[in-house]
Structure formats: C-alpha cells, structure tokens
Amino acid sequence: MNLRHLEYLLAVADTGSFSRAADKCHVTQSALSRSIQALEVELGATLIDRIGKRNELTPFGKEVARRARRMVLDAAEMRRSAEFLQPGHMSSLRIGLGSGPSAMLMRPFLQHMAHAHPGVQVSIQPGATELQVPQLREREFDALVVDMRRIMPAPDLVIEDLGRMRAGFICRHDHPLRRSGAPVSFADMRRHPLASTPLSAEVARNLIARYGPQADPQTAVTLRCDDIHSLLATVRTSDAVFLGIVGAARAGIRKGELAELAVTPALDEVGRFALVTLAARTEAPAMAVFRRFIAMHLND
Image 1 (tube, helix red, strand yellow):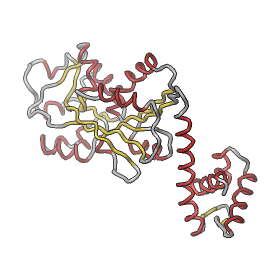
Image 2 (cartoon, one colour; image 1 turned 120 degrees about the horizontal axis):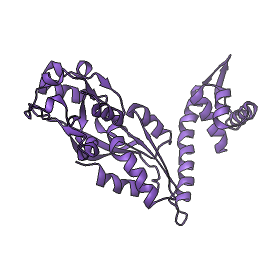
Image 3 (cartoon, one colour; image 1 turned 120 degrees about the vertical axis):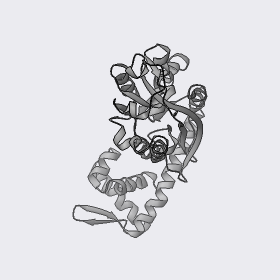
Image 4 (spheres, one colour; image 1 turned 180 degrees about the vertical axis):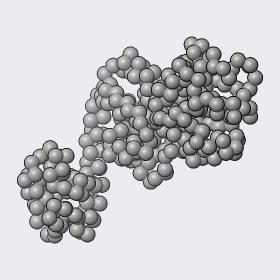
C-alpha cells in the first residue's frame, strides 16, 4: 500500500475538498484524484462520497483514514529517527511558548543558542495555548511551555510539571501607590488600570476568594493580552499595575524601572508551567539543550 495515497486521503479528510487537499500536498488536483481512485481500487471499496462540491468520507473511508493516520505518523517518526541518528546532527527545534514562559525564555534562549549552538535552526513562537496545542498535534512544534492550568490532559500529550513561580503585582518604580511605603488594598489598585494575560478560571476564583468580587478578572482587568512584554512596557510608562508572574519583570526590577507592589492581604498565587510534548514522538536532540535551559531559567 502506497503511503503517498494514504497521505492524500488524509488531506481530503482534513480539508473536505480535493482542490484544497491538492494545494496542501503540492500536487495537481487530477493527480490527487487518480491517487485516491487507485487506493479505492486496491481496497475494493469507495472511500469518499462526492456529493456536488462536497466530499465526505464513507464509513469505510473514515476507518481507513483512522488507521492511515497512525501509519503515516509512524512512517514520519521513522524518517525523523533516522535523521537524528546522523553523526553530529542537532537538526532544528520548534518551540511554542505561552505568555509567561515567553517573557522569561524567548530572548535569553535565542541568545544562548546563537552563541552556544549556532548550527541549530531555532524557531520560537509565542501565542495562546488553545491555538498551539493543535499545532503541536500537527507536528508544527516539537514542544510547548505553557501555563499548566490552560492545558487539558489527553492520552496523546506528555505533560511535565516544571514547578511553580510566585505571582504578584508589578508597577513602575515611582508609581503613586508606592509613595507611602505601606501596603495598599485591592480597592486602591482599582483606581488604576490593571494589566494581565488571560487568566484561568482557577486563578479567577482564587482572586475573588482573596480580595472579594471586585477582583473578578472579567471586570477588574482593563488591559489584557497574551504578550507580557507589551504589558510590562505599558506599566513602565503609565500608572497601570501588572498582575502576573514576578519573574517576568525580573529584568525591569533589576534596572530599577519596575518594582513589586506590596498589597494587603498579600497575593497567595503562583504560576504553574508545563513542558508539553507528543507521546511516542522521537525527541529532537536539541530538546536536551532546551530542557537544561528551562530548568535553569524558569524559576524565581
């Protein structure tokens, strides 16, 4: 059985269209159609119902696609393993980062790889966890480092706990709330913009339990995005207060540009991060370098 024929069948299953499947596979539509027909002849059954402009897998086609997906992935893993066995081969590394890990890992890791492993092709993409997990499943990433509370356990995912990091409130060093030197209340902070990445339901419940209904992120957070660098840049030049991982502001605190704001009662919250990979997937050699790096840098 020709693996290429199975790949074309999966492309039609994923796109629902012969033309889009042909574009995805970089072949002509006629060549892809002939391939599917050859597979149908070989198996002795119709795999796709062609209903006008719609193309739907038959019940037998769905079963073939389910088994074909595993076969195609296994073949890709064999090729990947053979490639990694070449002497001195470090290959490439494609990493997806959540907002917190992106703020603490992206620039330092790129700099580290440029100096220590210049031969490795490194691609790092920050983004929303909900969008990156499907990309991991499609083999567009080798691994993700994300907020553990934003990842749903699944049999095909290996989720490794990377530990916890303390969360807090960060403002510019000369913020009006710091002038008295005394801890401020959440009500005091509500007089200023509150900046944060999207927060999990668990964190929202903890904030409300700690500071009351006024701390509900849906209403309390006025500046929200997945890019912590942008949020902290806003905090440096305004009266906004950042709610998130203190370690993300480490560089600004060292430079004297930012400071942790004392709040009463103190925030009792931590960030929990995870390294997420695909089960049974051959790991790129450069992943060992990345694992050592995050162990050293993703901490308080």
